[in-house]
Image 1: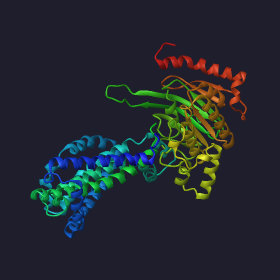
Image 2: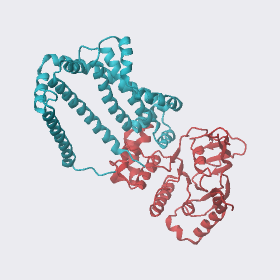
Image 3: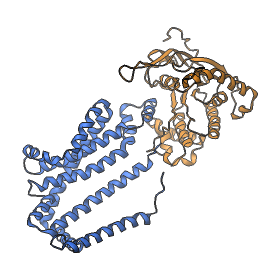
Image 4: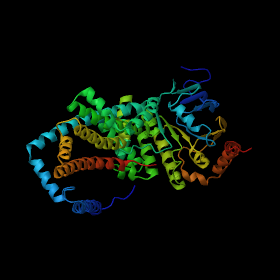
Length: 254
Length: 273
């Protein structure tokens, strides 16, 4: 096990990185000009305006609703599918290359089909977000289940566990660290899918705010929306990463 | 149920004509004859060791006796009921690899089997605390396996098996990954455990001195397909410990094991004896 760095050092590095990024942003906006790239202070001011406007709240609610449903589908669907494919070795071997190919496919090519099936509105965004997230969650879960050390399963058998006991108390905890890693990647891609879905063929949501601002060449709004999205995604990712690391710290790499 | 060749009630575990042939891994390859045919009678309360060259099917023998895999031919009886591909009640297994669960504390690892078996919490606590004390793990009850050394993790696994009070304990090279000094001390603990519980023990090892020091009887296996080519009774008293290595008879036992095994080990290496 590696020693953990002291708290001041870990947070100090993160803060230095953050400060560096803000500085770079400021320098770029100076160089490119305010009309091309809004600086940090003006972006924050616009973000605050957005957060106080009732209209923007409606868009946020729309996006969060779509994201919530999409995440539910991707997380639970991927977990179920991945577990099943991990346990059924042959099915997993057949499905894995197909999943990897689907993972590499730019999903935007499927959006017209999804729009034809679901029509304009929330269901299309949910479906589009979910197909982004479900594939990595499935692949991670499949590998998590498949790489459980065989000796754990032998222990489960010699302790005469029922199949349900073995699943709940051995398979699941043994696979959990990798499953959480998959959920982390799944979250990021589901968010991406929902936003892309909102950017095209939609009248509501943060993705729509973004594409609308692009159409109007409203640079401060583009930057403010991007900034708020980045803060949201980074926060959720950081929480998931923390859980992920805490789980992996216990894992012994023999 | 007493099949041909078994002496019902006389032995704790009986193997008759046990053979294991693995199907070919790829088309065009021959099936692998790993084990047998092999007969073995384990007396109740006996400490029996199996030694043999690498790849001779020692672990396969243990898995068949544990009910983890079924023999291709032959029969296994434990306490007068047949074992066939499903682990019987009263058999505990300690594996060669570290099998402690990294997501549970030491205490919860040891309590694991008791909880699944529905033992009440007061009895579970009593047995776990006793086993931790016996294995010298009391101070580590709240620790996680990742914080322990390999030897201590193996003790956690032994304790987890021990609390279920098995009547037959199977150990597959449990000290294989440990250094020599730790192995001698773990051997002492194993002897103490065996005396205190009265269980029958089958120990698989590649260390001849370990087999000679611990066992009442040692079965020497041939190169693949594994069969018993010699049975050595040591005649040690029941209250022995690792100081027996200085006994003159210890050298004789080890020498006999090696003379039986030398040719087989050469065969396993692919050289002529």
